[in-house]
Length: 145
Image (cartoon, rainbow, N blue to C red):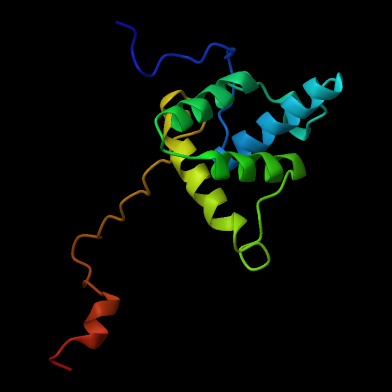
């Protein structure tokens, strides 16, 4: 049995995962549009080795669609805004924005599992200094004051 966190098929040594599913989607759409137009992708991040091929991101999206986790409306919004290389503005595009956010949120996990999107690291815990008084903002609202 292959481990779930195996390297993606297009990965190379030193490949850097995307910071977010949204970044991965915009990169994927830029590469797919370049392929469609018969040109090479001209991306600002082209100098950075990426952990996958664009088709792998599309396969993750296809799997979500087949599992009925997203529907055709989500896919259309992802395509439309991916071609524009921007996310919809929540104030100006009130119909597209909720579908965009939901689709990106659902795409995030499969991309993280495959190492395409970086897994966020937990914030470091602050250690109390031994002997120092404990000051908390909640002390300001205690019943004893």
